[in-house]
Image (tube, rainbow, N blue to C red):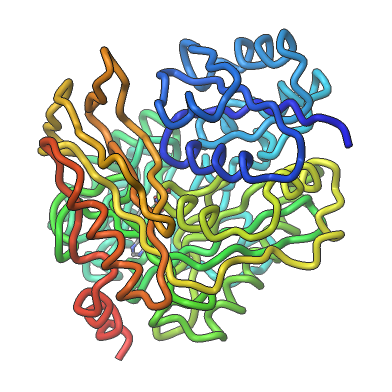
Length: 441
Ligand code: AMP
Ligand code: GLY
Protein backbone atom coordinates (compact mmCIF):
# COMPACT_ATOMS: atom_id res chain seq x y z
CA UNK A 1 0.00 0.00 0.00
CA UNK A 2 1.21 3.48 -0.81
CA UNK A 3 2.34 5.83 1.89
CA UNK A 4 -0.13 8.66 2.49
CA UNK A 5 1.68 11.94 2.89
CA UNK A 6 -0.99 14.00 4.61
CA UNK A 7 -1.13 17.73 5.23
CA UNK A 8 -3.29 18.67 8.22
CA UNK A 9 -4.36 22.32 8.16
CA UNK A 10 -5.11 23.90 11.54
CA UNK A 11 -3.77 23.65 15.08
CA UNK A 12 -6.59 23.41 17.64
CA UNK A 13 -8.03 20.63 19.79
CA UNK A 14 -10.02 19.34 16.83
CA UNK A 15 -6.87 19.00 14.76
CA UNK A 16 -5.10 17.25 17.65
CA UNK A 17 -7.96 14.71 17.64
CA UNK A 18 -7.71 14.31 13.85
CA UNK A 19 -3.96 13.68 14.10
CA UNK A 20 -4.47 11.16 16.93
CA UNK A 21 -7.04 9.28 14.84
CA UNK A 22 -4.63 9.18 11.89
CA UNK A 23 -1.88 7.94 14.20
CA UNK A 24 -4.08 4.91 15.05
CA UNK A 25 -4.54 4.07 11.37
CA UNK A 26 -3.16 0.85 9.92
CA UNK A 27 -2.21 2.90 6.83
CA UNK A 28 1.33 4.18 6.58
CA UNK A 29 0.90 7.91 7.10
CA UNK A 30 3.39 10.75 7.17
CA UNK A 31 1.68 13.71 8.77
CA UNK A 32 2.63 17.34 8.20
CA UNK A 33 0.94 20.31 9.83
CA UNK A 34 0.30 23.80 8.48
CA UNK A 35 -0.29 25.89 11.58
CA UNK A 36 -0.26 29.42 12.94
CA UNK A 37 1.17 28.22 16.26
CA UNK A 38 2.85 25.06 17.48
CA UNK A 39 0.34 22.84 19.25
CA UNK A 40 2.32 20.59 21.65
CA UNK A 41 -0.16 17.76 21.01
CA UNK A 42 0.46 17.96 17.26
CA UNK A 43 4.21 18.27 17.71
CA UNK A 44 4.29 14.70 18.98
CA UNK A 45 2.23 13.36 16.09
CA UNK A 46 3.58 15.25 13.09
CA UNK A 47 6.78 14.90 11.14
CA UNK A 48 6.94 18.64 10.69
CA UNK A 49 5.00 21.73 11.67
CA UNK A 50 5.12 24.60 9.20
CA UNK A 51 4.33 27.90 10.85
CA UNK A 52 2.45 30.02 8.33
CA UNK A 53 1.12 33.52 8.52
CA UNK A 54 -2.54 32.70 8.16
CA UNK A 55 -4.87 29.73 7.76
CA UNK A 56 -6.55 31.57 4.88
CA UNK A 57 -3.37 32.12 2.88
CA UNK A 58 -4.26 29.65 0.15
CA UNK A 59 -1.13 30.33 -1.91
CA UNK A 60 1.19 29.67 1.01
CA UNK A 61 -0.63 26.47 2.00
CA UNK A 62 -0.55 25.20 -1.59
CA UNK A 63 3.15 26.08 -1.95
CA UNK A 64 3.97 24.20 1.24
CA UNK A 65 1.94 21.17 0.10
CA UNK A 66 3.78 21.14 -3.23
CA UNK A 67 7.20 21.56 -1.65
CA UNK A 68 6.43 18.67 0.69
CA UNK A 69 4.92 16.50 -2.08
CA UNK A 70 1.84 15.75 -0.02
CA UNK A 71 -0.67 13.32 -1.49
CA UNK A 72 -3.64 14.12 0.75
CA UNK A 73 -4.90 16.98 2.90
CA UNK A 74 -7.41 17.24 5.68
CA UNK A 75 -8.59 20.70 6.61
CA UNK A 76 -9.73 21.22 10.20
CA UNK A 77 -11.28 24.71 10.41
CA UNK A 78 -13.81 26.42 8.14
CA UNK A 79 -11.86 29.59 7.30
CA UNK A 80 -9.34 27.94 4.92
CA UNK A 81 -12.15 26.06 3.16
CA UNK A 82 -14.23 29.20 2.71
CA UNK A 83 -11.08 30.91 1.41
CA UNK A 84 -10.73 28.17 -1.24
CA UNK A 85 -7.89 26.03 0.08
CA UNK A 86 -9.51 22.80 -1.20
CA UNK A 87 -9.73 24.27 -4.72
CA UNK A 88 -6.10 25.41 -4.56
CA UNK A 89 -4.80 22.07 -3.33
CA UNK A 90 -6.91 20.06 -5.81
CA UNK A 91 -5.51 22.19 -8.65
CA UNK A 92 -2.01 20.91 -7.87
CA UNK A 93 -3.12 17.29 -7.57
CA UNK A 94 -3.61 16.94 -3.82
CA UNK A 95 -6.59 14.80 -2.76
CA UNK A 96 -8.50 16.88 -0.21
CA UNK A 97 -10.90 15.94 2.57
CA UNK A 98 -12.79 19.21 2.73
CA UNK A 99 -15.24 20.90 0.35
CA UNK A 100 -14.46 23.48 -2.32
CA UNK A 101 -15.12 27.17 -1.82
CA UNK A 102 -18.45 27.01 -3.65
CA UNK A 103 -19.66 24.09 -1.51
CA UNK A 104 -18.34 25.67 1.69
CA UNK A 105 -20.87 28.48 1.22
CA UNK A 106 -23.15 26.14 3.19
CA UNK A 107 -21.25 27.42 6.20
CA UNK A 108 -19.90 30.69 4.85
CA UNK A 109 -23.23 32.23 3.92
CA UNK A 110 -26.37 31.79 6.01
CA UNK A 111 -28.43 33.48 3.27
CA UNK A 112 -27.08 31.11 0.60
CA UNK A 113 -28.06 28.09 2.69
CA UNK A 114 -31.57 29.26 3.59
CA UNK A 115 -32.22 30.16 -0.06
CA UNK A 116 -30.79 26.83 -1.26
CA UNK A 117 -33.12 24.87 1.05
CA UNK A 118 -36.06 26.94 -0.16
CA UNK A 119 -35.19 26.56 -3.82
CA UNK A 120 -34.95 22.79 -3.49
CA UNK A 121 -38.19 22.69 -1.48
CA UNK A 122 -36.45 21.34 1.62
CA UNK A 123 -38.80 22.60 4.27
CA UNK A 124 -36.48 22.47 7.29
CA UNK A 125 -35.93 26.16 7.99
CA UNK A 126 -37.60 28.54 10.40
CA UNK A 127 -39.45 31.43 8.75
CA UNK A 128 -36.72 33.76 7.48
CA UNK A 129 -36.06 36.76 5.29
CA UNK A 130 -32.84 38.05 3.78
CA UNK A 131 -32.31 41.84 3.76
CA UNK A 132 -29.80 43.49 1.47
CA UNK A 133 -30.81 47.13 1.82
CA UNK A 134 -29.90 48.99 5.01
CA UNK A 135 -32.79 51.34 4.32
CA UNK A 136 -35.60 48.80 4.64
CA UNK A 137 -36.18 49.52 8.30
CA UNK A 138 -39.95 49.14 8.13
CA UNK A 139 -39.78 45.69 6.57
CA UNK A 140 -37.33 44.54 9.23
CA UNK A 141 -39.50 46.00 11.98
CA UNK A 142 -42.54 44.22 10.54
CA UNK A 143 -40.61 40.90 10.66
CA UNK A 144 -39.60 41.63 14.25
CA UNK A 145 -43.18 42.45 15.26
CA UNK A 146 -44.61 39.42 13.48
CA UNK A 147 -42.73 37.22 15.96
CA UNK A 148 -43.16 39.54 18.96
CA UNK A 149 -39.44 40.20 18.86
CA UNK A 150 -38.62 36.47 19.15
CA UNK A 151 -36.19 36.44 16.26
CA UNK A 152 -32.55 35.70 15.48
CA UNK A 153 -30.39 38.04 13.41
CA UNK A 154 -27.49 36.52 11.44
CA UNK A 155 -24.70 38.39 9.70
CA UNK A 156 -24.01 36.79 6.32
CA UNK A 157 -20.32 36.06 6.77
CA UNK A 158 -17.75 34.54 9.10
CA UNK A 159 -17.62 36.50 12.36
CA UNK A 160 -15.76 34.12 14.67
CA UNK A 161 -18.88 33.15 16.61
CA UNK A 162 -20.12 36.73 17.00
CA UNK A 163 -22.32 36.84 13.92
CA UNK A 164 -25.57 35.56 15.43
CA UNK A 165 -27.76 37.56 17.79
CA UNK A 166 -30.60 35.79 19.59
CA UNK A 167 -33.60 37.65 21.08
CA UNK A 168 -33.50 37.90 24.86
CA UNK A 169 -29.91 36.68 24.96
CA UNK A 170 -28.25 39.39 22.90
CA UNK A 171 -30.90 42.06 22.30
CA UNK A 172 -34.12 43.24 23.89
CA UNK A 173 -35.46 45.76 21.41
CA UNK A 174 -35.86 46.27 17.69
CA UNK A 175 -33.39 49.17 17.84
CA UNK A 176 -30.65 46.93 19.26
CA UNK A 177 -31.32 44.16 16.72
CA UNK A 178 -31.42 46.60 13.83
CA UNK A 179 -28.21 48.38 14.74
CA UNK A 180 -26.43 45.03 14.33
CA UNK A 181 -28.42 44.28 11.14
CA UNK A 182 -27.44 47.53 9.47
CA UNK A 183 -23.77 47.01 10.37
CA UNK A 184 -23.95 43.45 8.99
CA UNK A 185 -25.44 44.68 5.69
CA UNK A 186 -22.64 47.22 5.44
CA UNK A 187 -19.99 44.57 6.05
CA UNK A 188 -21.37 41.60 4.11
CA UNK A 189 -24.12 43.03 1.91
CA UNK A 190 -26.77 40.80 3.50
CA UNK A 191 -28.33 39.93 6.82
CA UNK A 192 -30.77 37.14 7.67
CA UNK A 193 -33.74 37.54 10.02
CA UNK A 194 -35.17 34.28 11.35
CA UNK A 195 -37.95 33.18 13.60
CA UNK A 196 -36.41 32.08 16.93
CA UNK A 197 -36.96 28.36 17.36
CA UNK A 198 -37.48 26.83 20.79
CA UNK A 199 -36.36 23.30 21.60
CA UNK A 200 -33.25 21.19 22.12
CA UNK A 201 -30.19 21.42 19.89
CA UNK A 202 -28.00 18.58 18.70
CA UNK A 203 -25.33 18.10 16.07
CA UNK A 204 -25.14 15.35 13.52
CA UNK A 205 -21.93 15.24 11.55
CA UNK A 206 -21.48 13.17 8.41
CA UNK A 207 -18.56 12.26 6.20
CA UNK A 208 -19.24 12.09 2.49
CA UNK A 209 -17.43 11.44 -0.78
CA UNK A 210 -20.30 13.07 -2.66
CA UNK A 211 -22.20 9.83 -3.21
CA UNK A 212 -22.08 7.89 0.05
CA UNK A 213 -22.89 9.77 3.25
CA UNK A 214 -21.93 8.12 6.53
CA UNK A 215 -23.19 9.66 9.74
CA UNK A 216 -21.04 9.92 12.85
CA UNK A 217 -22.25 9.88 16.45
CA UNK A 218 -24.84 12.52 17.35
CA UNK A 219 -23.41 15.03 19.80
CA UNK A 220 -24.70 17.77 22.05
CA UNK A 221 -22.30 20.62 22.57
CA UNK A 222 -22.47 23.46 25.06
CA UNK A 223 -21.61 26.94 23.89
CA UNK A 224 -22.14 29.08 26.99
CA UNK A 225 -19.08 29.67 29.16
CA UNK A 226 -20.51 28.83 32.58
CA UNK A 227 -22.58 26.25 34.41
CA UNK A 228 -26.32 26.33 33.86
CA UNK A 229 -25.81 27.68 30.31
CA UNK A 230 -24.94 31.14 31.58
CA UNK A 231 -22.24 33.58 30.54
CA UNK A 232 -20.99 34.55 27.10
CA UNK A 233 -20.97 32.30 24.05
CA UNK A 234 -17.77 30.39 23.34
CA UNK A 235 -16.49 28.06 20.65
CA UNK A 236 -17.87 25.20 22.77
CA UNK A 237 -17.10 24.21 26.36
CA UNK A 238 -17.81 20.52 26.01
CA UNK A 239 -19.77 17.80 24.28
CA UNK A 240 -21.55 14.57 25.17
CA UNK A 241 -22.74 11.43 23.43
CA UNK A 242 -24.56 8.69 25.35
CA UNK A 243 -24.13 4.93 24.92
CA UNK A 244 -24.86 3.25 21.58
CA UNK A 245 -24.67 6.53 19.69
CA UNK A 246 -27.68 8.08 21.43
CA UNK A 247 -28.48 11.27 23.29
CA UNK A 248 -30.92 11.19 26.21
CA UNK A 249 -33.53 13.39 24.50
CA UNK A 250 -33.02 12.19 20.94
CA UNK A 251 -35.64 9.80 19.55
CA UNK A 252 -34.66 7.53 16.64
CA UNK A 253 -37.03 9.54 14.41
CA UNK A 254 -35.07 12.73 15.19
CA UNK A 255 -31.83 11.04 14.18
CA UNK A 256 -33.42 9.76 10.98
CA UNK A 257 -34.83 13.20 10.18
CA UNK A 258 -31.39 14.79 10.63
CA UNK A 259 -29.80 12.14 8.44
CA UNK A 260 -32.42 12.71 5.74
CA UNK A 261 -31.86 16.46 5.88
CA UNK A 262 -28.09 15.98 5.47
CA UNK A 263 -28.66 13.67 2.48
CA UNK A 264 -31.09 16.06 0.78
CA UNK A 265 -28.90 19.07 1.45
CA UNK A 266 -25.85 17.30 0.04
CA UNK A 267 -27.77 16.53 -3.16
CA UNK A 268 -29.04 20.13 -3.37
CA UNK A 269 -25.67 21.81 -2.89
CA UNK A 270 -23.97 19.49 -5.38
CA UNK A 271 -26.69 20.13 -7.94
CA UNK A 272 -26.52 23.87 -7.37
CA UNK A 273 -22.74 24.14 -7.66
CA UNK A 274 -22.07 21.26 -10.05
CA UNK A 275 -19.26 20.14 -7.71
CA UNK A 276 -18.62 17.03 -5.64
CA UNK A 277 -18.62 17.39 -1.87
CA UNK A 278 -15.74 15.45 -0.34
CA UNK A 279 -15.41 16.02 3.34
CA UNK A 280 -17.34 16.67 6.51
CA UNK A 281 -20.91 17.94 6.48
CA UNK A 282 -22.03 19.11 9.91
CA UNK A 283 -25.70 19.75 10.65
CA UNK A 284 -26.75 21.83 13.64
CA UNK A 285 -30.36 20.90 14.40
CA UNK A 286 -33.12 21.84 16.81
CA UNK A 287 -35.81 19.40 17.91
CA UNK A 288 -38.95 21.52 18.05
CA UNK A 289 -42.65 20.80 18.57
CA UNK A 290 -42.98 20.89 14.79
CA UNK A 291 -40.14 18.47 14.06
CA UNK A 292 -36.41 18.70 13.45
CA UNK A 293 -35.29 22.05 12.00
CA UNK A 294 -31.97 23.26 10.60
CA UNK A 295 -30.12 25.86 12.65
CA UNK A 296 -27.03 25.84 10.46
CA UNK A 297 -24.61 23.76 8.45
CA UNK A 298 -20.85 23.68 8.84
CA UNK A 299 -18.37 22.34 6.33
CA UNK A 300 -15.95 20.74 8.85
CA UNK A 301 -15.90 18.85 12.15
CA UNK A 302 -17.02 20.77 15.22
CA UNK A 303 -14.61 21.54 18.00
CA UNK A 304 -15.16 19.84 20.53
CA UNK A 305 -17.65 17.53 18.71
CA UNK A 306 -14.69 16.09 16.79
CA UNK A 307 -12.98 14.99 19.99
CA UNK A 308 -16.01 12.85 20.91
CA UNK A 309 -16.43 11.44 17.42
CA UNK A 310 -12.84 10.57 16.58
CA UNK A 311 -12.04 9.22 20.05
CA UNK A 312 -14.91 6.77 19.60
CA UNK A 313 -14.22 5.93 15.95
CA UNK A 314 -13.37 2.25 15.57
CA UNK A 315 -13.11 2.38 11.77
CA UNK A 316 -9.70 3.31 10.37
CA UNK A 317 -9.62 7.09 9.89
CA UNK A 318 -6.76 6.81 7.40
CA UNK A 319 -9.00 4.63 5.26
CA UNK A 320 -11.90 7.06 5.74
CA UNK A 321 -9.68 9.92 4.57
CA UNK A 322 -8.42 8.04 1.54
CA UNK A 323 -11.88 6.81 0.50
CA UNK A 324 -13.52 10.20 1.03
CA UNK A 325 -10.98 11.68 -1.35
CA UNK A 326 -11.12 8.99 -4.02
CA UNK A 327 -14.88 8.49 -4.00
CA UNK A 328 -14.95 4.94 -2.61
CA UNK A 329 -16.45 5.59 0.82
CA UNK A 330 -19.28 3.24 -0.16
CA UNK A 331 -16.81 0.36 0.17
CA UNK A 332 -17.10 0.91 3.90
CA UNK A 333 -20.65 -0.09 4.83
CA UNK A 334 -20.77 2.34 7.73
CA UNK A 335 -18.53 4.10 10.18
CA UNK A 336 -18.11 2.01 13.29
CA UNK A 337 -18.00 3.63 16.73
CA UNK A 338 -17.45 2.34 20.24
CA UNK A 339 -20.77 1.77 22.03
CA UNK A 340 -19.65 3.57 25.19
CA UNK A 341 -20.68 7.02 26.37
CA UNK A 342 -18.24 9.90 25.87
CA UNK A 343 -17.82 13.29 27.52
CA UNK A 344 -15.41 16.06 26.47
CA UNK A 345 -14.78 19.16 28.58
CA UNK A 346 -12.52 22.07 27.75
CA UNK A 347 -10.19 23.54 30.34
CA UNK A 348 -10.16 27.28 29.67
CA UNK A 349 -8.08 30.12 31.10
CA UNK A 350 -9.77 32.11 33.88
CA UNK A 351 -11.65 35.01 32.33
CA UNK A 352 -12.20 33.25 28.98
CA UNK A 353 -13.64 34.33 26.57
CA UNK A 354 -13.81 38.07 27.41
CA UNK A 355 -10.63 38.66 29.44
CA UNK A 356 -8.60 35.45 29.56
CA UNK A 357 -5.35 35.23 31.49
CA UNK A 358 -2.40 34.51 29.20
CA UNK A 359 1.16 33.33 29.65
CA UNK A 360 0.43 31.50 32.92
CA UNK A 361 1.64 27.92 33.35
CA UNK A 362 -0.56 24.84 33.41
CA UNK A 363 0.53 21.63 35.06
CA UNK A 364 -0.71 18.50 33.35
CA UNK A 365 -1.10 15.14 35.16
CA UNK A 366 1.69 12.72 34.30
CA UNK A 367 -0.52 9.69 33.89
CA UNK A 368 -3.54 9.55 31.61
CA UNK A 369 -5.93 6.64 32.29
CA UNK A 370 -6.72 4.32 29.41
CA UNK A 371 -10.27 5.62 28.97
CA UNK A 372 -9.15 9.28 28.83
CA UNK A 373 -7.66 11.28 25.93
CA UNK A 374 -6.11 14.72 26.28
CA UNK A 375 -6.14 17.06 23.29
CA UNK A 376 -4.18 20.31 23.32
CA UNK A 377 -5.52 23.50 21.85
CA UNK A 378 -4.54 27.07 22.80
CA UNK A 379 -1.38 26.25 24.78
CA UNK A 380 2.26 26.61 23.90
CA UNK A 381 5.35 24.91 25.21
CA UNK A 382 8.13 27.18 26.46
CA UNK A 383 11.19 26.26 28.50
CA UNK A 384 9.65 22.94 29.48
CA UNK A 385 6.43 24.62 30.64
CA UNK A 386 2.99 24.59 29.13
CA UNK A 387 1.64 28.15 28.88
CA UNK A 388 -1.89 29.44 28.34
CA UNK A 389 -2.39 31.41 25.14
CA UNK A 390 -5.86 32.80 25.85
CA UNK A 391 -8.38 30.60 24.08
CA UNK A 392 -9.75 27.16 24.98
CA UNK A 393 -6.68 25.39 26.33
CA UNK A 394 -6.99 21.62 26.74
CA UNK A 395 -9.83 19.23 25.96
CA UNK A 396 -10.25 16.16 28.14
CA UNK A 397 -12.28 13.36 26.58
CA UNK A 398 -13.37 10.37 28.69
CA UNK A 399 -15.40 7.29 27.92
CA UNK A 400 -17.41 4.96 30.13
CA UNK A 401 -20.13 2.30 30.16
CA UNK A 402 -22.69 4.96 31.13
CA UNK A 403 -22.83 8.71 30.66
CA UNK A 404 -22.47 9.17 34.43
CA UNK A 405 -19.31 7.05 34.47
CA UNK A 406 -17.84 8.82 31.45
CA UNK A 407 -18.52 12.12 33.21
CA UNK A 408 -16.95 10.88 36.45
CA UNK A 409 -13.83 9.77 34.57
CA UNK A 410 -13.64 13.15 32.84
CA UNK A 411 -14.08 15.11 36.10
CA UNK A 412 -11.57 12.94 37.89
CA UNK A 413 -8.89 13.60 35.27
CA UNK A 414 -9.73 17.32 35.08
CA UNK A 415 -9.17 17.62 38.83
CA UNK A 416 -5.48 16.72 38.34
CA UNK A 417 -4.67 19.75 36.17
CA UNK A 418 -3.52 22.90 37.89
CA UNK A 419 -3.28 26.50 36.80
CA UNK A 420 -5.67 29.44 36.44
CA UNK A 421 -8.27 27.31 34.67
CA UNK A 422 -11.98 26.57 34.75
CA UNK A 423 -14.34 24.14 33.06
CA UNK A 424 -18.06 23.40 33.13
CA UNK A 425 -18.85 20.81 35.75
CA UNK A 426 -22.54 20.56 34.77
CA UNK A 427 -21.89 19.13 31.29
CA UNK A 428 -22.74 15.42 31.34
CA UNK A 429 -24.91 15.59 34.48
CA UNK A 430 -28.52 14.42 34.69
CA UNK A 431 -29.56 17.82 36.11
CA UNK A 432 -28.55 19.67 32.97
CA UNK A 433 -30.10 17.07 30.67
CA UNK A 434 -33.38 17.18 32.60
CA UNK A 435 -33.53 20.90 31.95
CA UNK A 436 -33.27 20.28 28.23
CA UNK A 437 -35.90 17.53 28.31
CA UNK A 438 -38.29 19.98 30.00
CA UNK A 439 -38.17 22.20 26.91
CA UNK A 440 -39.77 19.43 24.87
CA UNK A 441 -42.48 18.43 27.37
P1 AMP B 1 -25.34 29.51 14.22
O1 AMP B 1 -24.05 30.24 14.04
O2 AMP B 1 -26.30 29.67 13.08
O3 AMP B 1 -25.16 28.12 14.69
O4 AMP B 1 -26.01 30.19 15.50
C1 AMP B 1 -25.40 30.15 16.75
C2 AMP B 1 -26.41 29.74 17.79
O5 AMP B 1 -27.54 30.62 17.75
C3 AMP B 1 -27.01 28.34 17.56
O6 AMP B 1 -26.23 27.33 18.10
C4 AMP B 1 -28.33 28.47 18.28
O7 AMP B 1 -28.17 28.28 19.67
C5 AMP B 1 -28.71 29.91 18.04
N1 AMP B 1 -29.65 30.01 16.90
C6 AMP B 1 -29.32 30.18 15.59
N2 AMP B 1 -30.44 30.23 14.83
C7 AMP B 1 -31.49 30.07 15.65
C8 AMP B 1 -32.91 30.05 15.48
N3 AMP B 1 -33.49 30.22 14.29
N4 AMP B 1 -33.67 29.87 16.58
C9 AMP B 1 -33.12 29.74 17.81
N5 AMP B 1 -31.79 29.77 18.04
C10 AMP B 1 -30.97 29.93 16.99
N1 GLY C 1 -18.62 23.49 18.61
C1 GLY C 1 -19.29 24.16 17.57
C2 GLY C 1 -18.54 24.32 16.33
O1 GLY C 1 -17.43 23.86 16.16
O2 GLY C 1 -19.08 24.94 15.43
